[in-house]
Amino acid sequence: MFASLGVFAGLGLDSGGADGVPSTIREAIYYLLIGDPAIYEAVDDRIWPNGLPQDPSWPAITYSISASNESRKWSGKVGIRETRAQISAWSRYQSEAEALANAIREVFTDFNGQVGDVTIEDCEIANELDLSERPATATDQYLYRILLDLTLTHRDGA
Image (cartoon, rainbow, N blue to C red; front, top):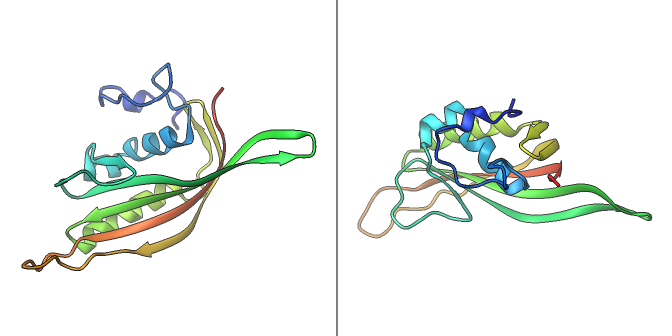
């Protein structure tokens, strides 16, 4: 699916390893998100690590890594990592946030494969949370947020 990464040509991406391809799970998550046509059509390049910028346009996606650990045996490291990641779909409209969360779910549910130099062996959506925010004072507009909590088993590139 992402063997050649040609799908990213012309998107002006500046993340990735020395060859411009993902070499970490964080980069692979970004590439999986921006490389999906339904997600890209909905958010364009409004995909940010760790949090939203000030005064963003909607809809948008944020992603972060909350934990990562390496599998070990008595003989030492085995090169496999298990990473917990959170991906949030944001919008001013509930239906739009739900549609975006569905598109994210489609990309990551049971995904396995090569993304650049990263081999994802398994991906599980461990939890889903509705974290919508009440309207601020003097407004009646909610901010809808659906958070998907993922567990990814992977090998990062060398």
